[in-house]
Image (cartoon, rainbow, N blue to C red; front, side):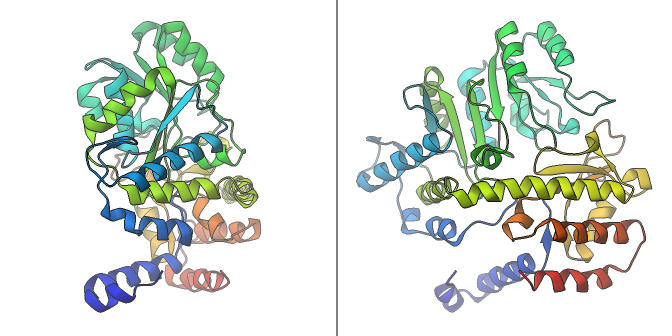
Length: 410
């Protein structure tokens, strides 16, 4: 991206941008919740739409001069519905949420009474802060009814989830997680929600791109509300969408504005529209297929090296590694790998006895390396580097040279 003007006017920021650009180019990013956007997405995000304040919704703004942004927001909505094959007669989408956290908060504000019950996966099992964890506003305003996974299979136990739901009678049930590597059975969740009279919400922030690429089952047939960020597997800007059945859309719109937010970031809305258009192209489907292939090859190779993989594998773009089984904390593992130019995030594993600041595992994701063009043979190399660093205790600087040589080819 052309940085001519910022280079001329603000050398400090210019240097930081260039430093981050260099860091991204010279590291292998395995963080499951990050990705690389296209130049078109980046250009839209930096466009002149950043100058426009558009408080309200199309044809109902509180400022003048919104003829163009009204068209933009409507186009973005149309593209969002079209990407996931949704009829505008039955579904609506709000494209204004600034990110995933306020999107989830807006849904709860709209549909769950204060102090009501939100049933969701607990954070230490792979859930998200905004699914009712006590340190989040969502846990202060509502009561989380936590569920987890089966200790033996390390996968969702739908019979146990039903048992909890019958006992607690939650107002809303959430499926969709930040560190769960298996496919979710949305049909079973729908039956559970119906049995206890709960609204069923899916947070597909992590796998939205996989649904768009048709390599992960679509939740839309079974759910009432779906939230998603746009910056993970969907390869868009840092923003969010809320899809809802028409019966819920008016309440949700009011919760977003004026309930939580002021004017939408129309430059982000433009950028979302670009990424949604990209996700409809054949190349994106191939990308999504490769993400799954890379994650599975990665997981299998790590197992061959002797690592314990949570749930024994993955169906998605990510998996969890139990590093503590070999006496290595997640923080230590992350720090060692970063010295070699390999970026992961420390992560709690189910039934973890250690703390979030230094948990028992790491989370590994394939979206970003797949965007960079890595294929199975590259994945095998990366897995071997991790094994050499963490098991054989090889010098990170030695491995870093090999990492940089591979990156030169990209």
